[in-house]
Length: 187
Image 1 (tube, rainbow, N blue to C red):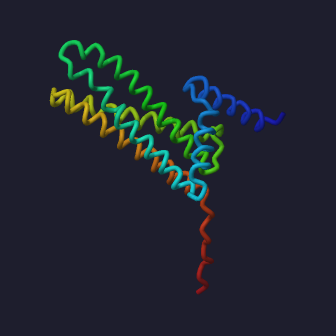
Image 2: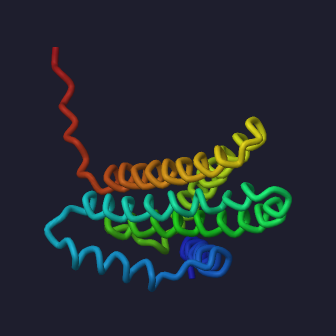
Image 3: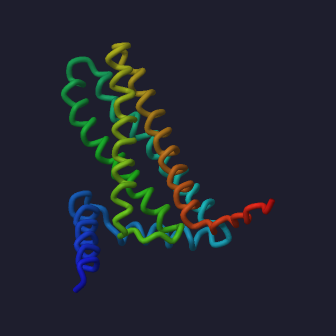
């Protein structure tokens, strides 16, 4: 086996392990969601279908982003459950966004097993971490838990849209035909 093939094979194994062991993402679920969207909206472009996935994710993000911070409203008792809810909610939101990016990649004909997805998913994790920081900062500054609930819902929704739209732009660029480059003018 050539060194290049061996390296590509090892990278593929790493990608599989990272996605499906560490992140616990299920390929079959990603593929079935994409197949269902394609069946439901056969006349739509991949971009339109991706926007449907984004809209669905935004609705769930809004609810989950707010619910994560609801325990902080209950004095004393809420602080204990705020930590548990924060960890669980953040994990759920992050995984949901990882699925969203892989579903959009598949809609645009990308190989979801490709090692390029690892970098994209790392960016998703970073974006999710930033969205979680917003309500925590609001709570620290205002000391009003109701503001943290609202901020959490809005931040989670905003990150869903940003992640989804970024994925659409990325995959459209990589599938678009190369623009014709005009020949240099003679003169």
